[in-house]
Amino acid sequence: MMTDASRGIGKGRNAWQRTPERIALAPARAVRPLRLDARPIGLELDLGRTALIVVDMQNAFCTPGGLTDRGGFDLGPVRAPIAPLNALLPALRQQDVPVIWLNWGHRPDLLNVPPMAVHAFDRDSKGSGLGTALPGDRGQILLKDSWSAAVVDDLETNPRDIHVDKYRISGFWDTPLDSILRNLDVRTLLFAGVNLDVCVYHTLADAHFLGYDCILLEDCCATTAPQFCTDATLHNIIKCFGFLARSSDLARPG
Image 1 (cartoon, rainbow, N blue to C red):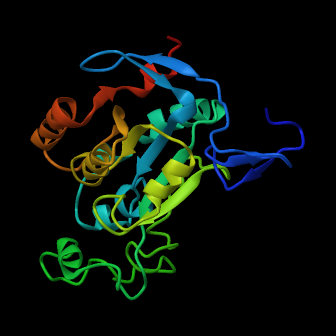
Image 2: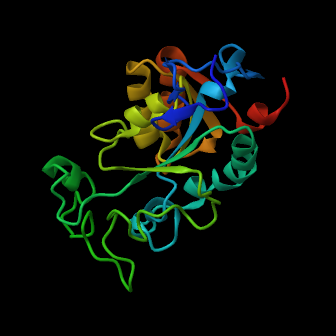
């Protein structure tokens, strides 16, 4: 049994606990069950092994003057998750559920982005894609630590939140996300963000391939793509990769 003299080795909820006599490789932790209305069936999850991943809710995609806006797309859909997320985030933090902001942020020299990914952001060769300088002091489009890569001002972040940069459609590709989640001893992932049919979907699919339990929060996700893209994405998730729920159901006592 660990005593008051114990100390942690490592970070996260999966850290060892050490006393002068021994090391606890798997510290005991009580299960914190929560029942959740979901499709295709109700769920019971352990809040102590759950994290929220918010994908690309950043200025580039959700703020006037960003990449999406400059491309002529309607920002209404991709800003719709802001209100439900602002209602959900305090409730999750109160339950010590980690909040992970997964935002696109590449190197200034683009050496971590292959040509195909660069091309995808500038298909008409107008020079308005990755690495392009924005007006004023906003830096390059989707540059790490720039205005473009920052979480939108309308969403409240917290010093305890975790920030992970990505530079592919999937947030698990060549990033520390999987290592962070395993050190947190997380098994269940809640997904939110944009674009639902691209970065959210492929990050969720990769999470499924890595063995995580995946729950998409429908009211906290959106896309600028046509409705059939949303329909196909939700169909594939519920059929192959996980479950669908709503943030309001997550906050409801069950």
